[in-house]
Image 1: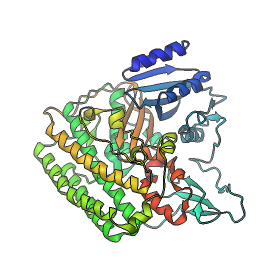
Image 2: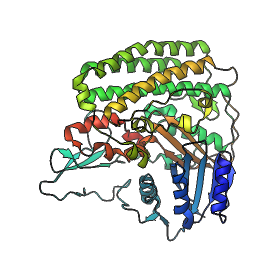
Image 3: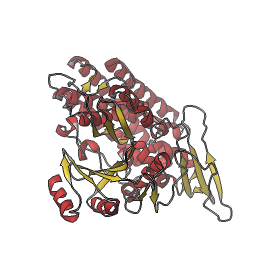
Image 4: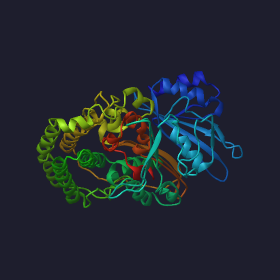
Length: 494
């Protein structure tokens, strides 16, 4: 498929040198062709994976990475930027999902995207005055945050209304921007893995695995089969615990204290299973470039799986209790609706998207590691509301247990780490983290140190579509909708 697709590109734009490297079609293109090439890719159902700006003493360029949704394959378009003019055409008229990528690059690299509807006031918060759009009689703006009690991270929500419903919702994030990508520069691959795992403490395997894949692509490392299977096993164990945490937060948002307590108990058991098996409750320190840090005995893996399976009855009972609670359903049904069209337009990922009928899952559309050989269902719902998102979380937990059983049944013998040799290069990696697609890119110097690290976690993509779910719903629904979206401030403010 990729070869045929590339031939079409060559015949349409013969002045561009198109080449295939692995599963990626690559090209250095003039900015004059960018809009047309992007329209062509979008028409063939390619989605934006990430957009990367890179600046050195000698060059400034922007790379556009897209992936196919109907067959394996990536595209990398590199566009040189004049270091004096520092302008590029905006792609927001072709792909709305490019919006936040361009705003971030403009803030951090001073590249101005021509005809972008709104640049500035993003990461750097260079305009501290809230801007009201509604001017009708009685219109007012309610600000929520950025400081909260408890464990909530810093985020400011600007909610505009002329009555009881939110008409316009704008999130202002990056109050605790950590500059992980900048900190990574000059560091070793293993040091940066620690940063990738801690981008979101609740998704250490999901984000760490995408980074490992990027490094292994850059260094041409072939991961042993046993390591691939074990990586997937831990990824599904993390998904189980992560989704139960999300369900617990939904229960808390609707003030169901009994259901919340039940979810807390299940979450705690899953944390203990992780801690006993891996030595860390959130699975830090499991991954390594080229495989895993340690091997695991089949018996201890079976014990962990058996303990997780014993919790399935409690998960099913919690789901049944929630789905028969009319007071609970009244709070989440037909609330926070995101249509399939909106989910496609904003290129939302993960359970958030799948609850709106978008079945994209990187384990399936761009399979990696052991997932290429494991059959499983991708749960989807059509309603796109809070209840649909809850059902997807529960269904994905069931699928995770099935995947873990299948992986353990087919676990091969052999090493769990490959030999790694440092060299200059670059590579793209991805994974289906609990919140959705995590896409990462690295560039290395001759000593294997990081020259550029680009981290695009799922929350960065999903916050962009946050307003679709929160607008045109009542103020009192706002915290419930927010809980069902499962958005991470910390993961976004990387």
